[in-house]
Image 1 (cartoon, protein in one colour):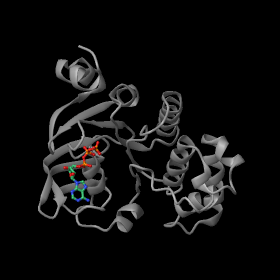
Image 2: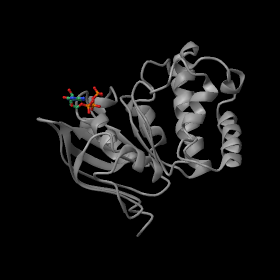
Image 3: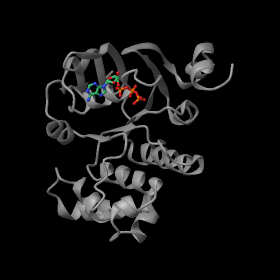
Length: 240
Ligand code: ATP
């Protein structure tokens, strides 16, 4: 049904000029679910998210709630409700926390609602409210990741694409962040696609997961299925 096929990727090919990275990726994400993309370095996870948000040109099908996304500009894809939190966060370091957050609302004209959403973001990240006027570059890594997430939320996204949110963060900070992602998913019913090296964490909040290897999905299933897979356990979970 419609909700089960909220985000549909079918036979997606993408790359950088002659460097072909994705070789026919297919997956479906249901409305309101958290979906994890696992896989080794260089598998194409980042490229998949870039293709989903229009940063990288793809061939094949990408459909969000019936709307065709392939070939559209990042700007158009954002307006259709897809927010991307890139690896390395894409935070504008010289700008203040508040300026960064307001940038996330660039597609919106409803000023009053934007002010309300700023408060909503501070609700998820109270520490950012204390640092409103501080340059984002002066924040800790975890706080910068919060700014990046907060900025994405300011778009009122229907889909949140998260690339390695745990990168470079201490385990405690990472757990806190994943808790907030889960709260956002539950409270806003935002669909989340998260690329994550830390498979334990990702499977902890995901309903379904897909394993990407050399540009192909080699395994798909519920988080429990993926956790139970011997090969995944050895490669990504650090036990057998
Ligand atoms: P990682 O976890 O290391 O980020 P990944 O699964 O996200 O890995 P990608 O970043 O998508 O993998 O990279 C897939 C392949 O595409 C790699 O071989 C990489 O070298 C190549 N690649 C990535 N970005 C570019 C680019 N801008 N130009 C050319 N090749 C690129």
